[in-house]
Image 1: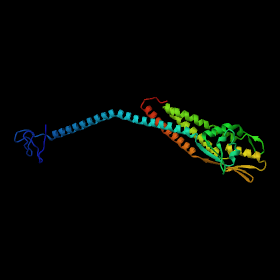
Image 2: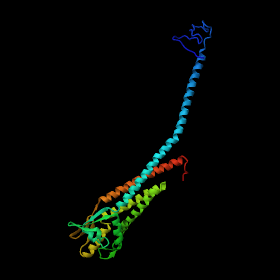
Image 3: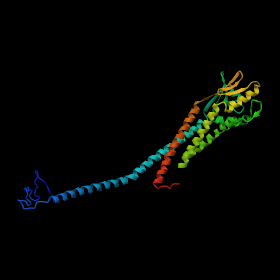
Image 4: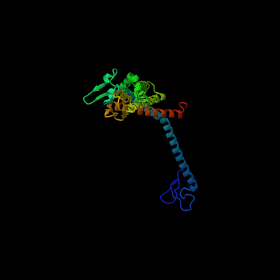
Length: 312
């Protein structure tokens, strides 16, 4: 039943639209009874409830639509993450390949008068030794470090001390084995390259990351031992040979070479572009593998939370 109000405060009859007079309960025109205001309030409240119920139904239908869109959005997100993971895997593969090539570039230039005494220009490594008008020098790549230590390991194991007796130099032998460990770089790189290309699972990413860390440690140790004359196999061997030739005086290893009375045998290591390039490529390999490891770890956690796989 429709109820309307006029311009004034009076109530209009729902039948003839005539205005009820004050204190009039029955329409003076058609005799229709005046509505009770309590009934009017009930009608208004009923209309308000209908509006609220209708709005709630619309909200429920919208939630249903969102529920239908949810899986689609998840699938799209999974596809995007999958493409990112695939792209990072390819970048790791490329960085490892470049790293292998960098092993054959010149890393260090060792110059000074200790080069000859340090058995660098031996029959096995003659091709590395060069002379200029200023000084002798030798350039080492990662492969050359391995080849040099392999060929002269026995010569470096016995060093003549200040008393003129042959003894084993722990520092020299240790450095020789660290240079021999350069062969591990090739093996670990090839393994990581194969894993990055073939093995996509969580464990494979961890292997790639750990191999990068191993390579970084080996290169770091070689850099440390070559640059410090007190533990460098080449400098220690040079000191031993000079000691055999110069029977007088005392020899001292310094950071810049070997001191012998009024003589000083220079020793200098310079890092070449190949060394810095190798470190940069290895850093890219390590960084990308860490990022990929974290992404796969997050993917694994989500799968466990969604009940797709069981936690172990």
